[in-house]
Image 1 (tube, rainbow over the protein chains, first blue to last red):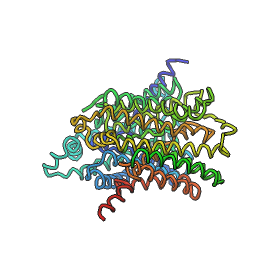
Image 2 (tube, rainbow over the protein chains, first blue to last red; image 1 turned 90 degrees about the vertical axis):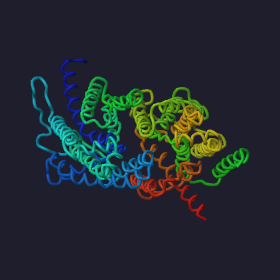
Image 3 (cartoon, rainbow over the protein chains, first blue to last red; image 1 turned 60 degrees about the vertical axis):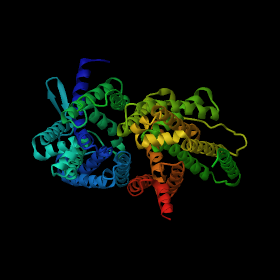
Length: 290
Length: 312
């Protein structure tokens, strides 16, 4: 059963998968890690992104990645709108923790069921010329179905990293995370900056959704599986660190891939949630905690 | 309301339910009533930890399913009678509750909620990979052919659920009107302050988590007989988690009345919507109601009524 080839294949697949997981988790790292907004509905927004991509791909034959990028502004506005509601109804009243959580829990259901009513429970997928191809790099074959999403995800991660570190607005977002009160004293409005950051978080869901539907077929309730993954990654990555998110996503991807190759796919999901439980119980600050 | 009057009321409701089975013939009402009562138990159980102590449990489905599977295993292995199933399910889920109570040592707020969600998924994976209970294919449970006193088995299960719901509400009432309830409320409002004032926070949290978990397991105990064909995806359904949290939220989380009102209203609405419209749409309604209520009426229906009354 065990062979070096199998191990190598599982490792490569795991790394590619991990890169993609990073794209899905970036929104959580931004919203939860930096802004303290517990957006457990983020995976549902990712699924929404998948369906948006599916619709333009099946109707106009648009490339899924282009579609994912094209939808980013719309998702940004959606994110700003959601954050506005969240802010006025929960954050300002000071009871965001419990009720805010329930609010997002409700949003999951609204998105999921709306998609269900519109498109049914069938699995949907996208078409692009390169999706079925495989590229040989030395002894290992890289399926473009996984390779391209991983590359795009890495680009997105790098972009966000540079934005947060190099630009004025990016630094402002990190300043809100560190001390919103001090920011207010400097004459800046933390809510406006949080608008921007939360909008960005949801915008990443659009592209992540496009990547998700490239990797495999999607149906409305698939997002639930990702709730554990993205939070495991965000927590493991140390809440709010983009680099940490990438490393944690790669670790999780490799572990899941190894589990599903050597023990069977039905165990893979337990890995991410098991890790999440362990991390929460043993080291809540994560590997790269601030 | 004194303890004795409470007991009399509880007995009265049960007798009424038994009398009902003599009058109503349509089996559908028992099927629907069972589901609503099951939600009364789940919502009340959730509220003991979530409403009184302020620790949100997203894993209700896991506790419920653990109870149901405990019962299924006992039926398959030794053919245990229903009272034994209820007790065993309560004990097993109660132990799981105790363990999430221990988690509150390190985790608060959001992290606790996420941990409970993770726990439910890990449990589901274990069950899916457990061949004895049929794995993901599920397993059949055959109802006993005859049951004493009742015309058929569904009527019997309905009455069992009435008894369980009454018991759950009684426990919630007792907790609320004792020092335990006041201690839990202190934890909900400010845990550090409560600790400083000498409230035994850990012991109270462990107690609340255990009772809450045990009641959810108890709600699941008759499930194998009710559904007769059980598989993990539907037993661990997220609907249970959403409903057992939405119902107290909509009814009101600070009293035992809230979960009852929420479960009866929302549960009946869902039953009616499932029959008349579609089962997907009824979840959409729950989601929207949840969002609207949490924004407009943070204290639920009970809070709304109270506010109106105090205004005169």
